[in-house]
Length: 275
Image (cartoon, rainbow, N blue to C red; front, top):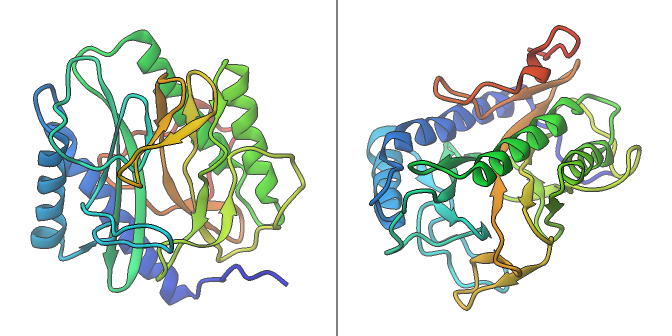
């Protein structure tokens, strides 16, 4: 029997609000992501916006899963070869850097979780391409979401697209169910075989957040207990949305006025997007 929670209409409304607010933090911080800013300053700006403007709670701050020390900041800032969970601090963003900002807010008990890639100054072709392919991977995964589909369908299409472009998929971290709990069932793997794993039902809510590497998929954990880097020091990228399974398809909950548009192949008439 599935342990994946099916959200009620009221819970879905709560998740819509939290998701939009999570996305609006990324809209707000976008103009500040530029050469010379520190990751700590980006954290401070996001924290103040969440707490003082939105009235939301930064979910990562003091988050402490079993076996970890409490996470010390309000957002994650993962620069260049950092795959995920980079802790903001004194690092200064330089021309050509790429950085993932991962934002999760809590509003009325509900979590809105999303992340975007930012290319600083004049990015290299490599950095731009990695970000674009990773974004496509996320949306290809999202487009597989509908009742009756399987989680393996999502992972398969992401893995296929990444590897076709010469990249690798991180295996140790994955998307996750989300609601009033930050991380719940199911685990959403970004690799796999179609027709495998849990069958999707309307009312499920989970994140799709592929981590794609230029080099090998091998990882290493830093001494701070949180920061994860590529073992070969090559760059990594990640994009993330929170997605609701609807009666007819999917609804992306982490959208706002500043969200980048889906790739053209998603909005094409042959690929209708469920409202």
